[in-house]
Amino acid sequence: MNGAVLLWGLLFSSIGLGFFLYGKKQRAVVPLVCGLVLMIFPYFVPNSIALVAIGVVLTAIPYFFRL
Image 1 (tube, rainbow, N blue to C red):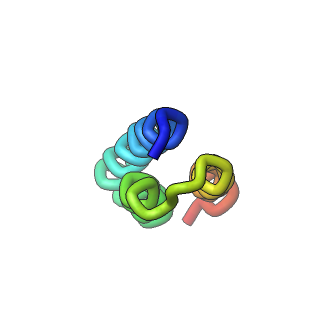
Image 2 (cartoon, helix red, strand yellow; image 1 turned 120 degrees about the vertical axis):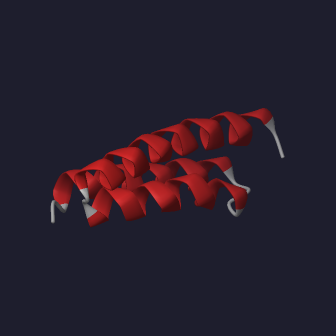
């Protein structure tokens, strides 16, 4: 594990925490689920390019799918 994976994981986990808290407060399912996934997935992705790609997609999902 290198430093880039740790820093990207920290960034996406922080964004996930924000989405999770927002989804919980507003009772919105999409940000809540995306927040949980953003907080958990960095533990399972060892490649920094894949980590960034998945993180960007998961961060954009609540913007496009507002349920």
